[in-house]
Length: 121
Image 1: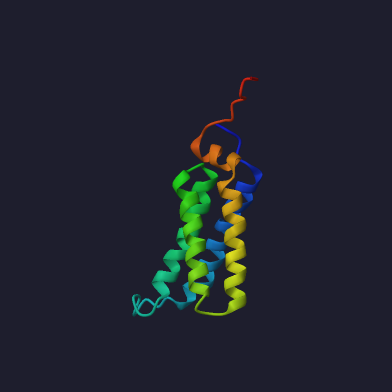
Image 2 (image 1 turned 135 degrees about the horizontal axis):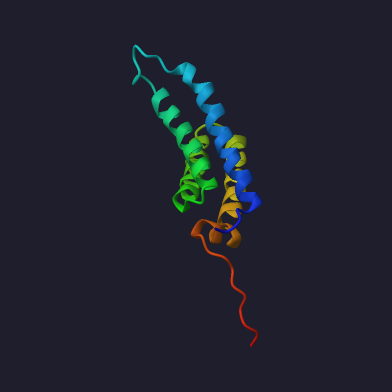
């Protein structure tokens, strides 16, 4: 198995931390007497999705990096309904995460392959 790129490790742990902290923060909004009232359940599931994506990116699951990218893209769209500065910050974060997760070394890690040297012509 190819060694995990350091940038992928950092991104994975950021998603894990985001999932855990977000879940802990939003779980207080979830009320057992009316669990499906409001959007508390949706928010909790989205936070768990970040956690799952981070864990499985550490394990090299290709689908997990796409979940992470889609998760962040969803937040860009969602923040467009809030403030301009929030949208810009999420968009910049999405650009950085896409750069990290779509680079050649990351793509090879998620594919489980290693780079081969091209013979000299």
